[in-house]
Image (tube, rainbow, N blue to C red; front, top):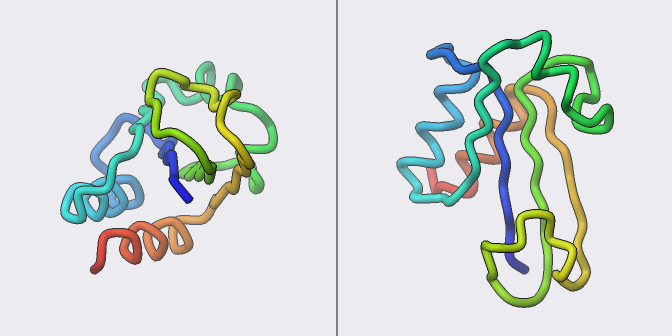
Length: 102
């Protein structure tokens, strides 16, 4: 299975976000870094299912079978697509570290 990873957090250097970003960088793990610059306005635009506890960080993991076409942002043409959401700092950094081989 292939993965598409999106990491949502504030656009600031704070440990909750930077630990995850550094782990993905060190492990050369491709991901989309969605930085929220104005927390209230942009955060309200996130789908409700993305924020289990009403807070960030959020990691969205899309698993799919099929081609590795990055031009299909929504993944509509990918077979057997499933989306998982991690929404606690500890779970996200543990997942990032595992993927990165740390």
